[in-house]
Length: 345
Image (tube, rainbow, N blue to C red):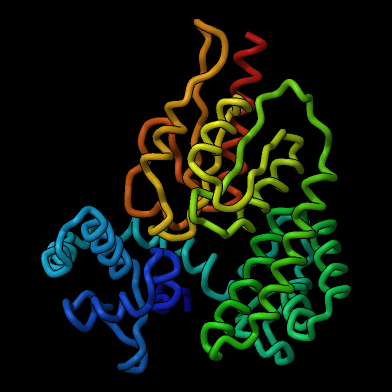
């Protein structure tokens, strides 16, 4: 059965929408904003239509509508939008819930995908063999084993597959274990994150060299946002393609981001926001409107609104909201291809 048939958990929905699971449960109890079906009659499992209703609730409350009024409006939301919401939930479940392997990507031996077995103590589900090995090493606090395995999967599968099918599922499994075990496994999460970050940064600096005159991609977390690993993955993916980057890391102040953009003259700016509380739409608009270059040929950057914190609003002109690492890389690669075409013309 698919994730969209079963629905996804309250914790998965809350993380993606940038609210707490307590808030989601409270909306259900107080205003009836809950799933139509519950697993075993008790556990909430959110269908695509249910998630669409929650997204509308988030959008309305974020715009200042009182929760009770927002709930009434969200429940009146037409179910005709469920098909579009289902596509969103498929992506959501693949990035937040345990990853179920369908078939290996081209060039990957079919025997490398295995069902999860005992050994790590983490809620992994159906994952790659290498993912289970990384989880075991993390729980043992075996840094050398993690480093060796991460280097091996990057070399064998490339950055995108290693990130989406090994690193992310293991990181999410450790996070779920920590959330459900009274703050145990914090040391596991910290050590795993450090080794993933190290592997991604090493991949970024060993990518093919690019011409220094090319306009770079600026990558930064919005102010108050500390989650950098997804941006580090994007940096490594761009380096793998030979594209120039300027990575500024966590919690970049608005003034510093403005200075970085104006001094770098980037082709694109990727802004990461993990939660709605950190998403700064006015700052994103300011960056998208930043112009630089010689008079008569001034340009503005394409702004990538990366991360779940940006959900709930339609991107404004000059912005795009990619659904994941693969799409972000495709968008930027096409952008550089278009610029090269204009230059040749």
